Every structure is written in C-alpha cells, then in structure tokens.
Image (cartoon, rainbow over all chains, first blue to last red; front, top):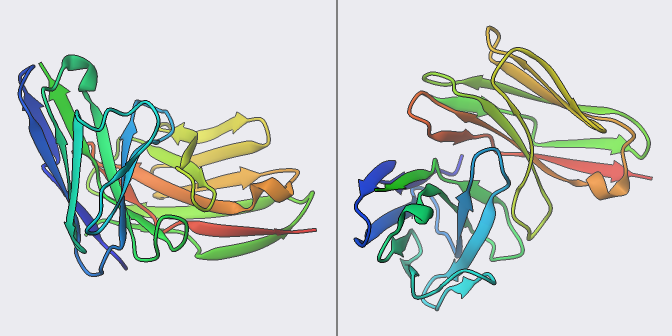
Length: 117
Length: 109
C-alpha cells in the first residue's frame, strides 16, 4: 500500500527558532498534500492544503507567515514552523493524495511531535 | 514490520448495526484511535482505547483486546450521514501513529 513518511519523528527546539518538517510519499506521486495538527484525543485540525507547484491554501485562523509550506515536488512537502513558541508544541501529521484535494484516498504519515521549550 | 488491517469497504442498511474490525501488529502500544472521515474533510476523532474493553459513546462503541491485537468500531442505528471512511490508527512505543488504510462504509436506504 501507499506509504507516507515524516521526518523528524520528534523534535525539541527552543522558543524563537524555526523547525522544518518533511513529508514524503514513498511509492506514489502526491498531487495534493495536507498538513494537520492534533491535540491529545482531539480531531485532526486541517492547517493547509498544498498542491505541487502552487501556493498552499491555508485554513482560517492559520498564519501562513508562521507555518510555511512548500510542495516543490510530487513526493515532498515541507512545513516550517517559524519563530516557534511553546503554544506551537503539538503533533503535526501530514497526508498525501494522488487524486486532488476533494477526491482520492488520503494516506497519512506517522506524525511529528514538536516540543518548543 | 508494523501493520494495521481493516476491511476496504463495507455496506450496511439504514437503521441497522455494523461492526468494523481492525487488527494490528505494532512495536509497542500506546493506544488505538478511531476516526471518521467524510470525503474532502478532515478526520474527526471518534474514540481512543488504551485499556481492554468496550467504550460506549452514543451510537458508537469501540472495543479493544490488546492480547489479540484487535479492535472494532460498532455503529448502531445507522444513518445515511454515517456513510464515510473509518480510520483505525495505533500509537506505537515511539508515540508514532500507524494508520490503517480506512474502511469505506456505504449506507443504503
């Protein structure tokens, strides 16, 4: 089956620094990648949707200048949390789809646990 | 390797009961999640089981047997709006989520 990987799996950073999280589709080409944030035992909150080669579409309330998303190829998307603060500590999950933002199955990555101290 | 298995697709009738099974083999266990996902939407959290037994929440119940590496999601009094994909995910010893491929549930009148 389709595999999505994330790197790193966990990261600890100091307040004010930036952190980059990678999301890769290993055996398929991802037309669309999604970035989610999850708090414990809560639903995944969609942060943004990115299509290869174009700007990401951010959900309401998500700061696009703080959460930089780059989807430069059909197998890689990156999320950079800039000037991280402790409230940005969370579990970040990406997913990838072959079929676009409103069609096709989504394959989820294992998540990246970010802790900002 | 780590693996989560759940049926690809199931069909049920409005008003009936359906059970969606999930079996898992993971390196360690820190809980099992069930999510509901409608097409084009973000997954919605349904349940979290970390101890053996049945957790009931309205029309939805989730069961876990850690010794068998097995869980099921039980949906009662099915409604048309329950047509969705249901995702099973296990958190392993490194607190990473291992995802099942999802079960597409089709509800017929």
